[in-house]
Length: 423
Image 1 (cartoon, rainbow, N blue to C red):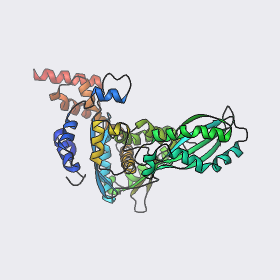
Image 2 (cartoon, one colour; image 1 turned 120 degrees about the vertical axis):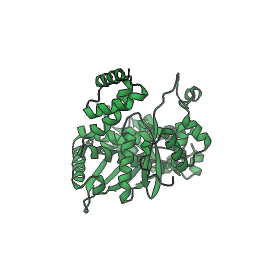
Image 3 (cartoon, rainbow, N blue to C red; image 1 turned 90 degrees about the vertical axis):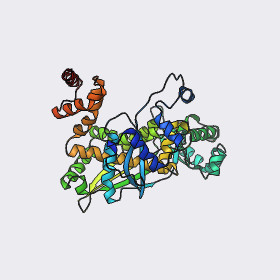
Image 4 (cartoon, helix red, strand yellow; image 1 turned 60 degrees about the vertical axis):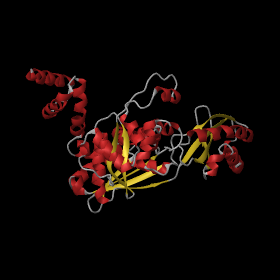
């Protein structure tokens, strides 16, 4: 399978899907063996990853299909327990292909660490003293990671802010670090620790916190797409989506749910690739509120031709080296499936998944309502939880959907009826 465009992928069995992914991604027999093995993360590996480990938790691992990003086909690994996420993102990716798919840009893999200085009286003069020591501070920071420097990374610059607080003014130094293909938390934290004594000596103040910021607003990825008006359902659907977006842009109560839908797609890829979902999520939500009001992470607008143009700009602190990305067996295969060459490319793919997922949710809201598609998939979970044996699951699901009653009590009643009919 040379293209990620695939009709009826969901109709295949899990084994048939795996075969198609292997043909597309070139996975090895060893990779396939890992993917076929439940709970592949052994307790011995888990014990090295976290403290007090007693077991592991499996999450469904699927693939987003149909993605065309910068002219290149991708099958995107997604780990999530929520029904409809993968199907919805894949469906919108297929629709967006008609106008060229997704197009990306980025600001590079730049992370920030903050150094907090308190007890300084002349904060404005102190701010300039720190700027005067810029070259010396960069040299100290870069001594901490010669390998990163050899790759062209390292601390590149600094910023100095003065903020008011309930305990008085603080001087906050931001060190700006190119972390290359690492997420970079350990690197920037180590640099900030090393700079603390020099900054205390320079300013006469006391350094307390020295730690990265997850508001990685210097590590942005940007993705845009266009959905053909006819493929999306007509110009009235375009208008409905723009209206739904406008609601989210104006109201933080709506924006919270709107952005959660975006993160359904983003967090699924972040988790699948062994990256830090909490770091990405906190950065995204903080960025959504950067102007003092929490708002939408995406923008949707109508083009002159009546099509739907969508875009997202979002911090994306993910890496290809270090952490679970290089330890978790399935995460390593997820990265291999993508064939990415850099952490920035990975971030762009993740943001495209989020934009596609957002489009799916908005289209559902603007047409049939969010529940129809979501509940049709959720109904399988309800049927299983109600005790339906494998041979009755489809029949229970079909009847609940037909009745519009996707509930545990109704599932149990249908199971009982169908079971009695078989006797």
